[in-house]
Image (cartoon, rainbow, N blue to C red; front, side, top):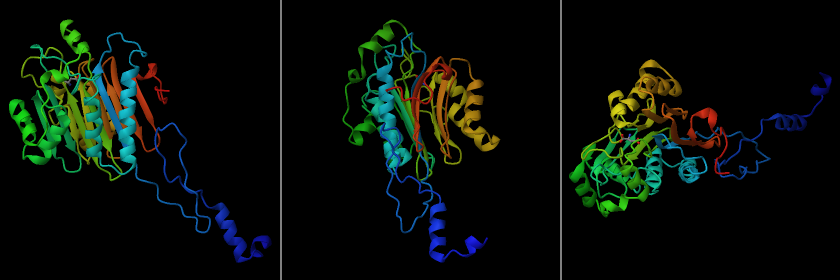
Length: 354
Ligand code: ASP
């Protein structure tokens, strides 16, 4: 057209600039409650940066039932999981490694007496505490785990020490407690883990209140990691070991497929190799993470388990066949949610702390 042919080069350049796509937001901090901040675009040389690599984090605080407690009574649990998610996703946003993030998030929940891991662990039949934990690095498949420890404040930190400072994967019982002291971890008395609520659970022979904790993460470097920590089942026998410290059962991570942390009845999870089964359905069967998690849990007895999983592309699956599962997720797109009951009854897309 004559009009276009008649435009001079400066006008054409201005037109091209006006039609260029808008610059992408430079920093978006997920779930902070305040609007995302945008860097002022450079007017002279408008460039569209490649989108930042994604990250994603999921946590759980145990599957089972909540024993008739109301949403109001469970607010502290939701607040604690939300705080752990916020901290974990802030670390991932800043380029933190998935392995560091899952350890950090699980540590926070171990220190919270509301959950059945670290402080607040359930009582064994003998009225003591025996703790299990494991961690796995999806980049290298390196793994570390401890079972039946009694004097270690943060079993997940000891699991990581087993991974990084021994040639073993799993240390159990007294040997694991002794190793903790060898690597400089101050022992705590076994009573440190006791809470009144857990004592009452033992007296009432409750065994299904859940409360195990776990985290799975996908970081900006494309690496996956998983971690799980528990006091096990209320009233368990001396020496009983569940799924949580068993790589492939309660915990699994492999950059080829996904990272998974399980919760529920350990004996059932052990029989199904739940975490590894999900990964194998993805690698060998080509299923997506949601389908793989649903298929594996669908093949297990109703009421037996829940999983959190994140794929090598950062997709999250939160699946359970129990009445409830404390679960939550956050990611680079600003998702931040915590749920307890089965999906239709919960608060989709809302930050329940509001
Ligand atoms: N899976 C854990 C165990 O059996 C318990 C739980 O997840 O609540 O030791």
